Length: 511
Image 1 (cartoon, rainbow, N blue to C red):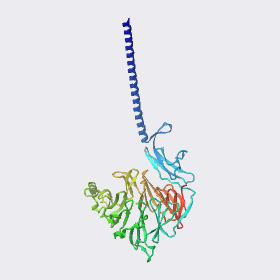
Image 2 (cartoon, rainbow, N blue to C red; image 1 turned 180 degrees about the horizontal axis):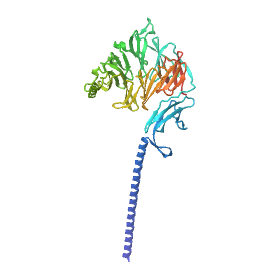
Image 3 (cartoon, rainbow, N blue to C red; image 1 turned 90 degrees about the vertical axis):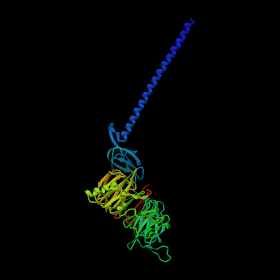
Image 4 (cartoon, rainbow, N blue to C red; image 1 turned 45 degrees about the horizontal axis):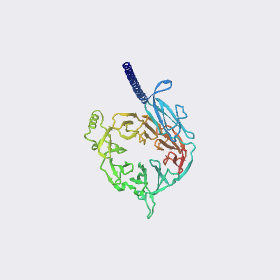
């Protein structure tokens, strides 16, 4: 009896143990199945998310009616901020600058409005999966306060610093005036140039004399502290580097080096290095070190500066500028000799820290103008020759844009942020928009023009101040009785300065 009961107990324990093991195995199998299912779902979710993101990046979007559409994005800003953005006539209450908006591919009309200001609009071409940036629109206050801040009755010329903070006013004496345009109260500071130029007449013992020269060129350094001045008297030119922060440190370049240079340009931000052309040869001038370099480029026709690089055009006869081991150049010369007349000009790049090496770019029978610029994260080379413009990515051999021009430009300006190339001959203008890679032909109101800021062109016709975007769009009339002889500028995105009846006037353009 006892053995029978013991056997039953042992059987019961074994049965429970086996049942427990079976339940454990079932639970383990269930957990494994759940894990496999969850991991499979996660993998499919990640793959689906990647696919969706890839489609979104490529410009695909789920539009109204659940239709798949190709789209891009518009990024738009304004001065002042907070303008209402209307796209194709629709202006949602929440849509304000500075903002971004997804749009279907194709042309869209974009308008900016703000109470108390004028309006701005243009047509943009949105492309699949790409960002179109419009960060330069400016709205002007309609009712503007104005005040006279300086009496410039003796002024003959004025120039504005790159940051629009300073105005240097030149007169027929050796006491020039420097104005701080960022100050609520504009007070002139006198800068004496009595000892800076030879073209002065000084009475015995006088501290102020007469300035007899004619100013033919003015350019500022990027640090806004130096002005390179070219003066002419009796067909003789002299170059001087004016230090507006410490005038006593100004230098007469022509006198210091006992040389008459034909052309000169500031190379670095602080104006310690200048580039000068003499007898068609390009030299470097070390101002603090008082040294003129050997010839950098012979038979130079034109040049431009970008960072540490000089891009230039020179006559082909300047064989010393070629690297004789340059196989590409030799092959091109041989090909040209076989199928076409030999080129008259060539374009190259030389770095100031390695002046012995010249990088060849292109050649032509016609004069060439070339520029290096940076647009966002890419460097570009723009070449203009024989009424054609071509744009290359730096180091690339295939043009990303080519277009015909209606004229060979007399003046070319690359936007400070590289977003456009402006060209003109007289009142005819052409602008290459680097964002859209499109050329636009337009007409200035006068042959004389200036830049109100980095993107707005102005001209003064019969005393009327007219402004345009860099491509001629959004033409607006701002003020009347404005002098065309003196520059117009905007400072701190707040004040508009111009001369009227020999007085410097300031208008408040943003509340």
